[in-house]
Image 1 (tube, rainbow, N blue to C red):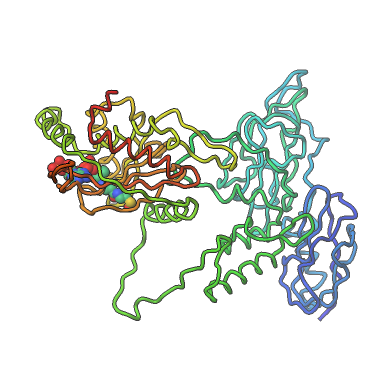
Image 2 (image 1 turned 180 degrees about the horizontal axis):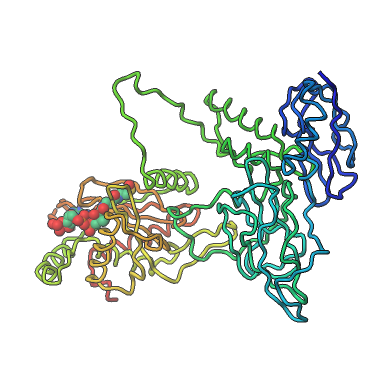
Length: 547
Ligand code: CAO
């Protein structure tokens, strides 16, 4: 056994760098490459890995200390043959992974001059390639830090790549404007691959950018929020990538890796480090608390909803585990989200569709000639469009800022379609402008597309209101869940002949049971009263559609 003093390696020019995290303590048995401390300069955080495996004898630093190259970090007890001689060899053989070579501040090499572009007094385009990655190859692009049109300064991070061992920020070799991106999140890149095209002013800057620095991204700058979306995408297509959300947080590569391995969303973790930096312990504590809460049946997430305990159903009889389809999983998530976000109220009424049905049946021959099936659905679409026009308070969505209501000047209506893969909601556009034949054709076409798995995301976007019809199946009524961000949905049950009092006697009438569920954050009972009464009146006398 020998005792080795582990010093601060070359910090790429940085000096008096603050210790913001101590990752080990006396007595710890550590492996080679295990992070010892995290240092933070103005530009970057750097994890200093151990050059050797061994047992920590004593720490020579504490949080808040300022360190420079050569300062002792700790004393390590190492196996005799694992000592200084070997570590020196390793340092040469494995240069990219040793601390002395890796932690470079994110800055360019101004002395390098380009021979790729002619120097001009105006602007020139410069292709920025992936620099030397210190031996790493085919690394993942985990963050894109710039967008097309962004102005970047020399040294600004362009992308963050991650190998098995480290995250690396690739800095811009010059100031300029990003003309086009050549990589996307999730792509794999190697040295020389194109990152982006930069428009630089004046003489072209170096064709070869500064080397990537093994670093954790500096605390994120808050991005200005983008313009409000006037047409909220439907829940079914909401598929935000976790990687881009991750860029918002201030965490080192090892912490990010641990979070990713454990499936932890950093947004839900409280950072304990200086300037909101996340440590590994923050992630571990979060998971520990989560597991404890789930085990005790207490709250499982920030939503305050108690978790449903896991159950082994096989103890009660034979069971079979079947994988849920993607659509079924999305539906489950969207229904929970809608149900938990929107305080639902459901109102019930029956529409007298006796005359509507007589008219519909009288059109059967013509429908056959046209090759169209005329069910009650096109009438319901038309009546709903009329009611949305009559009561515009239904044709809205709540803006995400909680301050505005988005009033829609168009009438697009979704129809719930039962398919073998699960529930899908294609949207018919401009229902108010279309006739019954067109609506019949389009709803048949969309329902067929849904059943054959041929719907495109756009076919399911932009709905203002949804009709869910179980009329062909039966039932007296049901309470549908609003397809948020829409604010209302109509449930249609099976029409039946019922005795209706006409003032002097009961007469048999064809009655259609309808329900309207609405989001009480956006709609009040009186609004629904007006909307529903009008809709029922239109279905009772479709000549009203002409008024
Ligand atoms: N009352 C009585 N009969 C009705 C009816 C009603 N409310 N609605 C439809 N019918 C009749 C139709 O007229 C047709 O009969 P005919 O062939 O004699 O004319 C028959 O039922 C079958 O209609 P359909 O289902 O083929 O067509 P549709 O236009 O009524 O419905 C669609 C189309 C896509 C809405 C439907 O097929 C469907 O998928 N419904 C399920 C929706 C769903 O799952 N909702 C629940 C969502 S929440 O989990």
